[in-house]
Length: 353
Image (cartoon, rainbow, N blue to C red):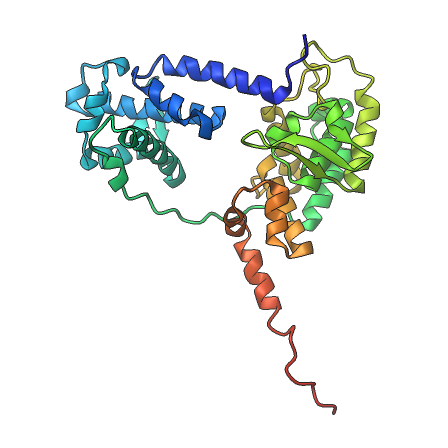
């Protein structure tokens, strides 16, 4: 029996998780998830399931009509009877609420927007398939998003970060114990993230046979299942080669035999572990910046755009399906380039003194 690829196993696990979540939702939700399946990833559908769960809990907690209901008691005709006022009340509820474990939960603009977007997709599906007559979600005005500052590492901070990964001289004594065992792996991993801009999920999913040193590329699975080759430079190649010399001498645990990056427990490293190691080193180098793997991706995108000035190339390399997503992230750099162009074209030769 052939081994299941990592990204396929992740998808299987997500589908199992989604099925568990759907058992907690009203039965008619099955139609919704079946309807959106061809156009969405399993991860997206899980996010929808969590968001809908919050919405149905809101109805039970806050709407007298549903006060004696269980989630699975809610019917589609109940959804059809809700008004724009009910949904606006839901938006207000999302700012501050209690979850099913009676823990306080707050949502800021982006969290509210995501949950409302999920609700809009939910209503749109049933309205489009003519299973409900009303679509109050179409009337919702989305919250105004305030642009967040793009946090990234400066050039000197990149060098300092990699130096710290290599040397570990500012780590605590306890951290140094682990550092001696993982520094070659950590340096390869962070050099790869900073040198290619791949997502953390793409990084942890890499297998040994995904590396092509002959052509200088790695084979990855993008969001949505698209398979692409991302190319790397000499610094990344050197770091990967050093790590592979070590990695090929490790007997990984069953199920992780082909994984490129391993944990100390000899299992495929997890996204959470990568987030923690990035945080560990970055906190030493730039304590005032909250650096995550995604910020390393932004750092790469920034450096690539500064070097090439080609926003379409940056979008392609980062795997953005819409170049407007890239433009939004690098708008400040585009303005910087436009300003630098003001004296690039000479209209008349400067007269000699």
